[in-house]
Length: 444
Image (cartoon, rainbow, N blue to C red; front, side, top):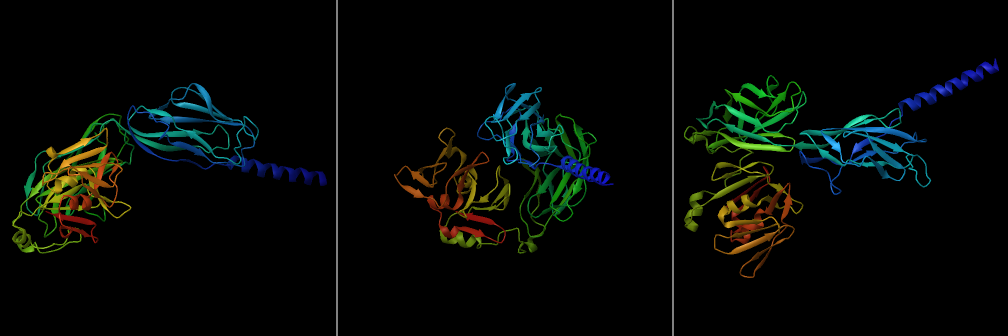
């Protein structure tokens, strides 16, 4: 009987240990994600790492494999990742990783140390670049992780013509072209957004070509009527394609006198805006005094400023996060949005800043090698600002301090709106910030 009990007890312990071993797992993750162009390779400065956390189950040597999608390894055929960890390529997309567990020289302490594997790859196809872990019965968890988004083209959005409508109306056909060979998974959504104070009024007809044939569906956002989605209903081919939206109806809110409406399409880092229609301005004169939370309050009547200055007033309004701005009530596109930096300064792409204070493109020069912009102010002064500095130099030997640094962000050179405006002689009274809707208004 005692022998039988002992056997039973040992069996229970074995089963518990077996179950623990079977269900043991590691915490894995990627330490950063990239946006890249197809054909690019990662480098030492920006290579994402696959992190495999330490585990008490790593008490003996083990091996697992890493499989890439939309990328290929640029490692040598074999080599060392770190002490005690070696690899061997099993083709362009598959890498076998061997871990010699222990604390001696030539071993890796996988019980107490996380394993970092640099994802040194070349991006071969457009779309999400992923790495999949195949555990090969080791304690390393299986899983697939996205570490980059590769593009080889991009979106264009345009209306066949700018329809002229009053408060409500039907647009001309809108064509969205994707020149990339991106494959879209079933369930992916491309986001559509209208300019502030414009809303979608119906579900339009939608049709796709090439990779989008019978693969797209239009959906309205339930709570935000200025937003909609194009849903991918089946995984597409790796091909180019276009989407056509016809019989689309939109509305504008009362009291809004913009004479153009814009639509923006966004997917991951790809974002494009274009005008889609013009609005008449005579059907709501009596309602212009209405105020909305998305429109900056009036500073004062233009006539009052004109009487005091005897000059034509130009007014620009920039809302944080928007890919458009208004110039005397007319909406215009921005390649990159305004944002607020750590010093609470409103930052804008250089041409948007300079254009809105009366400096035309022919008076702006960008030196990509030196990372600096030079421009001629409306008063004829040559000025210069270099990335990473917080001052403006002028040809009259003046050095003008800015309240923050000029920076390069997302491949755009950003300047502080207020500092530049003050430097060229615009009074502080004509630079106004409305915190309620995160909008800066400037007049000159």
